[in-house]
Amino acid sequence: MSRPLPPAHFAGDPVPIARGLLGGTLVRLTPEGKRLSGRIVEIEAYDCPRDPACTAGRFHAARSADMAVAPGRWLFWTAHGHPLLQVSCRPEGIAASVLIRALEPLEGVGQMLTNRPVTRERDLTNGPAKLVYALGLNPAQIGGTAVDSTELHLLAPESPLPAHQVEVTARVGIKEGRNLPWRFVIRGNPWVSPALPSMEMTAPS
Image 1 (cartoon, rainbow, N blue to C red):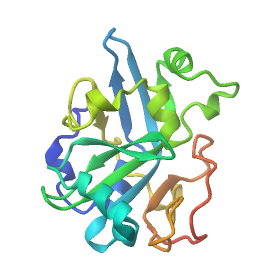
Image 2 (tube, rainbow, N blue to C red):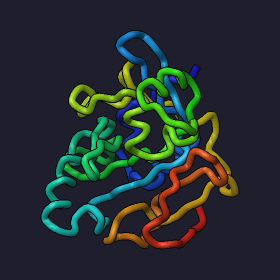
Image 3 (cartoon, rainbow, N blue to C red):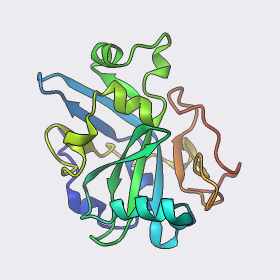
Image 4 (tube, rainbow, N blue to C red):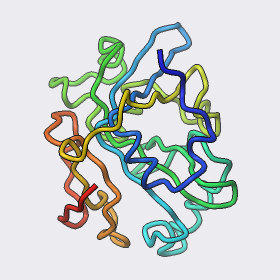
């Protein structure tokens, strides 16, 4: 079985790190010992030194400072009152991260449905806040912990996804930096979020 990715894996540029995580697995072990997991089918990168989405306006500049921690730490970005799961990247003092936007459920679907009841299973984890609730994550307990903890960790894909399986677009829900192709999606996967990119564009991977 693959070992969890260590914090050192996240010490570099978040854009290739995000691309490399696509198709990997997010694993949650609950306090009761239940294992919940999902395949990463949508992910975004944020790299504040060169990213207007981080630095535009005092509000975003203040929030981006929360990302300037040691690499490989779980962080939560709050949007419209909902927590979104991300991992800090680059060396300490530089604000950068990857944001996990959608999962394809693999294990523990029954528990996920208990945590977040939905009519259609594909709506369970097809959004960044949805997956947080479905996995039963508590930001106060998990925020700031190492990305390779037993309770919540990431497994790399068995092999990188080939370019023809990956769609590269602009990110979702931003005004500044909306033309940067830093969102990676598994092409045609039904668990990708229904949100549209901030600017309709596709770039080669």
